[in-house]
Amino acid sequence: MSYNNITFISPALGKQSNMLVYVPDDLSKAPFRVVYQLHGYSDDATMWFWRSNISRYAEDRGLMVVCPDGGKGFYTDSVLNDEYYEQHIIDTVDYIDKIFNTSKKREDRFIGGLSMGGYGAMKVGLKHTDMFSSIGAHSAVMDIKDFELINNTDPSFMKRYKNIFGDKVKDEDDIFWLVKEYGSKIRMYFDCGVDDFLFKENEKLHKFMSENNIDHVYKTFPGVHCWDYWDEHVQGALDFHLGK
Image 1 (cartoon, rainbow, N blue to C red):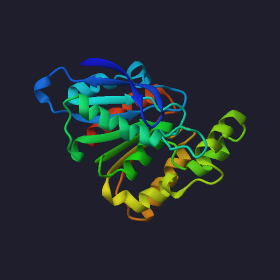
Image 2: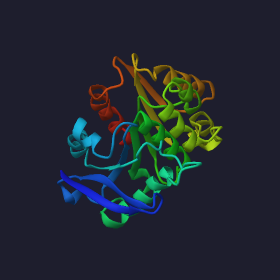
Image 3: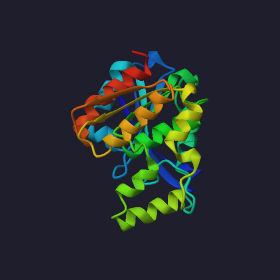
């Protein structure tokens, strides 16, 4: 698999941003199906490559993987900061489709992520069902409203949270509202370790979706909020994208 470190001007951010792109060795399989894989709050665009075997897993499945840099912006168009990370992901898809031999079909484009990136994958995927056909999220921040309560002892985090979401989280940034509004239009997979600090949020969303007859796949496994867990279970998400 070839590894491409790309720096480009992001219109949504108004600055240079970088992404890592993994392309299968067998170019005869192009145009490629693509999964956009989003990183967590403390990571950057390189971490899926350095901390997991996702490139090998993708190679085995004939998938391209694109890892954009989401900063600490929760893949959200900020209320107060001049940072539009949701639009940044949409711009990234457009850029990739212009310079690589990718399939432009919705059914061949997927989005996934972990933790903050799991939230981003759920939100961006649900809001842009014309662009993505499936979502795969691991150990995700699912209840962004209650997530404030979890982190309210960290002043720097809370300042950033308020700058991004404002005083009240909008419906279009709330996963619970989004799955009820758009959940019938996209395939969804999410998992979480039973000892993960975000486990209750994932259980809460699963219960909500089940009660509202929203189709999804939810799995729980032994594990905590760590790369050993994500490296193992990203394989299940990749297979889900491919309908396996």
